[in-house]
Length: 274
Image (cartoon, rainbow, N blue to C red; front, side):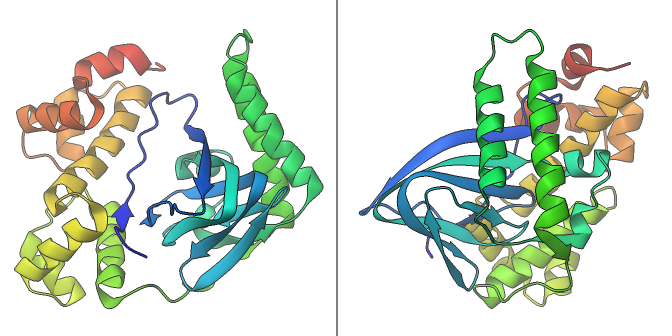
């Protein structure tokens, strides 16, 4: 795998915390290797291919659902060509609906007609934007699918499988630590020492494996948490900034605008549920 990138998923509509697109890969193409914190489902609708996931090569044929569990390095190659729907669900959606995504691991390959039917229902509901109950319909279809595959095609997550390299492992561990401790001060020297590299080497491999700098990732993670608080609470913006680890409201506003393309105050007006 080459051109490895960490994907940070931006869910533009908090009511629909999902990403959906349809991809076609031909023999001469390979989808870029990437990894991310959310769970991804690929549903094959045409042709055949191979999903390379960490150390495994998973055949993908029409009707198959391939699951990319969180933090798994993966890409897709085609025999002749392969066309598939890609669904990515925000981990928070699992948690909000009683599924502890951190403690489970989905089967990597699901060859099940009903699971495929539910995937098609999700795709149809997403495309049907003329439906006056569009958001409700999509969420209902997603929940029906997640309930079915969690009940029938998942097990307790006991360990991580082997990954590509020492550098990738170090970056993966650093990302997990940042995601769990973003509200604290996170000096670059401390993060580098934590994973056993020098500051310079850690900075370099982090950018190579994620496409962003360490500071950019920390700020993005803090902004994601702030976005939730802006939607769900009445807390003052300055208080949210401090709670999420920003040293000043002005730096928070700048970082949030870079991450979300909108000021925190405008984001709250647009998406607040209160």
